[in-house]
Image (cartoon, rainbow, N blue to C red; front, side, top):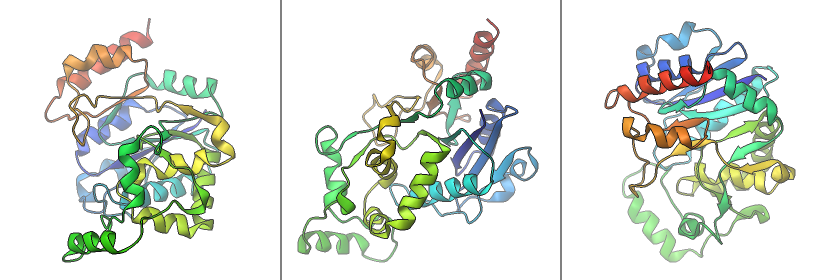
Length: 285
């Protein structure tokens, strides 16, 4: 089972290098999208590391903006353009880390071949706080003086937005593990439906909705598993998840997930070392 790990990174070269090392396998390739703001000279290992591909045409990614969707799509396209027959495309951030060995991860996807793993729930029925993302106009993806004042008046004067193309919106976490066929479908769908692309460019945090919505409203719906295989701690109730530490080890391990996020090697370096030991012990049992 060949896996393309698509990693969206913007900083922390040492941590990114460690993440790639933790997932190395003869059937693993790494497609890295480096934020357009990052200095590529601080990531020299991306140039000459085996089976590592730097995604071309880097995007300057803004938080909550469509630019992160664009970065992901360029990564998807780089995977497809490689011509390699991947079983899965596994979307990660540079702040993620595996909870199992590469062999266990590859075995899992081989056993579940054809399933698409993503977290999704109905925006209208379950995730209602996300409704304004779709009904209001958001200029997050654009930079010009007074944009928030313009956004305010646009929302006062124009009618509420409606989902295009008859789509039923679902979503939640942007991190997912998809079959190559599903990735191809997403790329072809957006190429053929510019109105959908235009709609999501005016949506706040569209990366948490667009891919799930496209697949949920497609022939791939029956292949969806409502599990993104990631341990993520939102207990602090903030816009970003908790940075995981050694005190979280038992919880993340007991979750049975394949990956966890997010980690900060400079702030809490010991937790990754402990994870490595735990993974090694588990692998050789």
